[in-house]
View 1 (tube, rainbow, N blue to C red):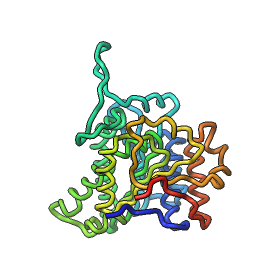
View 2: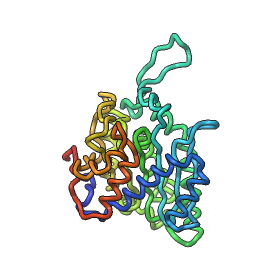
View 3: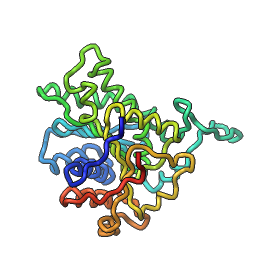
View 4: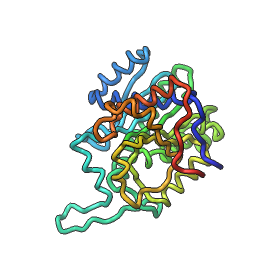
Length: 295
């Protein structure tokens, strides 16, 4: 089936703005309790909670899960300035100084070693946190209405590997592959339930992997959209083999993004700038984004 496009006008920008806002606030509040408190105040919902997602013990947080009403957001964060060099860890390497680095493959397709390893290390904790959030919602007598997977920069790359695993976890735990399928996880409903949004995502896999991912998006009609500013210098840092197409890749109009150059920062890559554009688009009737890819 064809991939789902972003609709013209502001109707779908509210979810994009909220996702960017969570990524922005997560970058400001490294303490998850402070993050949760800030989001509670922002959304005026004191039942909201946030959970840390880490790739291992004694490691920095790489993502957060936020449960807000019947909406669950799994947000994969960008790197800090002293972690940016990790974007170059495309190949794997053994512990010995004499060992050569080597490419890593998943489903016979080449993938970014560091991003792929990060997801594998946090996959269990992510699914466990999702279980807790779904249980919390269902125990209130409600059902999850939205599960948004979002990633920024390095986190956008990591989220590339998370999407299929999270959807399959939903299907196997509450959906048609489970022993007790629930109404909200019907196969035909997954497209309205799950979104995969990325902001200035760094390339994470080759054409073969992205083809598999696009087929998956199309099968379940998952809205998979990436957003990039033309002034973002990270456009030029992607590993050549990972410059393939995935979902719809939308270019933000310069006439709008240019209003927020200071928020984007010197490299045009700041999450604050992306949030400001999404906020503007949600409040104004504009359909000026264009897709770099045509399917």
